View (cartoon, rainbow, N blue to C red):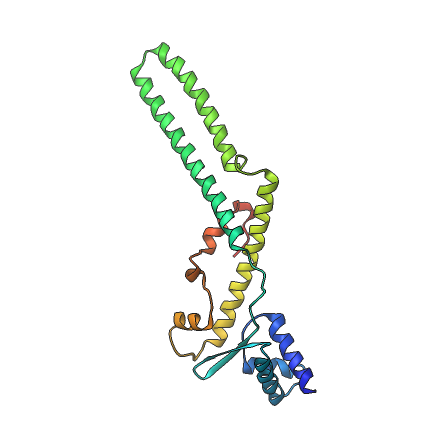
Length: 222
């Protein structure tokens, strides 16, 4: 196989799978395409030199990965907007829940302090107000006050897509890192910083917390 064909094959493997590889992993995959170890090694060096793939060294170990620019991810604006809407809904829910408890406490006090006629009158008033507040609370829980059902469905759809991509990439990385990190020198956090890996913890996010933004029946399996 010609040198350019070997380079194209190795580049296709790395870019299509979009994950880091060790040289031996590429040699093994290259052999399934009829490439010899020397051809794979030369192709990798040429691709690195041309900037088509990126090389990272960790002690005696070197890994190769595709350039990460241009990958589609959930924008910060979309993430911030979703978090803001969720926070606002949660705050309103808490406020209404507190109001309901306060009314229940007031009703209990009135039963002990008023005459039967006054109790009946104020109980009717409070019962009516309580029913109104509970109906409003149900609307808040359903998101009707903040967004339309169509908008809510679209937000949930986009969030599910992002969670699926997040779950898939996180699982892929764990498998890859487990395979290539054996024998690497240094602390894992330092290695992450050097290679440019952003973990959930470093980004200040929690998968489970974000997943709980979805209704329970619509959450994906982890």
